[in-house]
Image (cartoon, rainbow, N blue to C red; front, side, top):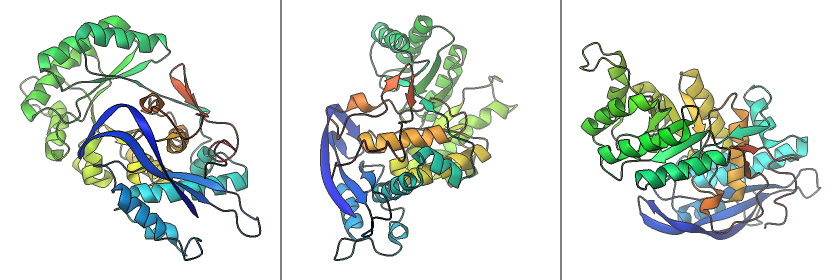
Length: 363
């Protein structure tokens, strides 16, 4: 196993639980081939994100800890990377899966789907565009540009302004793009329970697909209570409310706790934070079995991990639009993108494994 640290800049600072960051620092992981050339080479990416995964130093230490003095993987290396180091596990799991898929002449999506007895993966995955915080006119104009570019699903950032302002912004977007475009509102945990309840009531006429993380990540009971209102005959409004998606709460509690609490209609799954493409697809399958829809997104990863997330999304039958159109958030990257966004979708790259030989030579 070979490791190569890297850093790619962001086009704008990213706010995290540990403060703003201006670059994504990670580690490329390469495995194989065997000394006898019997196996293929595989490439993975471990790009930690504060608040979602372990630290950069913990990630590198974990990866170095599963090599022997000759630089070879120790027995059971993947099993030694526990849930405290998901980014490290993602890097190694992806490299091993890429090598195995290339050796079998399968795409990573095909191999992942076969492992879980899923149907043949789709050739592409639908993606949403993200529209940031701005005044109603600017927000509506940005939304219209995204639709003109081929997106039919938009995620609008809310919560930084008053609820009145956000309702006005979303109404302006709906008026600008029409009823055929799916709209999602992402509050990033900004509202308290009373504001969240009011938001769901006032936004319901706009026919949103869902409201993402309306409450802080640690308020799992509150999220469950918001969903309960739809079936509560004592609720004052008596009207159904919008579906709830959870993102940050998943990182805090884990999928099992979210499903046990009946707190979400949709879960946002990040392969890097979950510990690998295999775990992300397993989580998507578990969510589906519980009647909860999965959406795959990135932690603003570099091109290797971003491509892997496309394979995961393509392996989920009839997946909803995913948050994979994040390449534009990077000022530079590790390699040319083998699967750019086109008409609101990302095609699975040609070739076996991640993308054939597109990432060969990165280490």
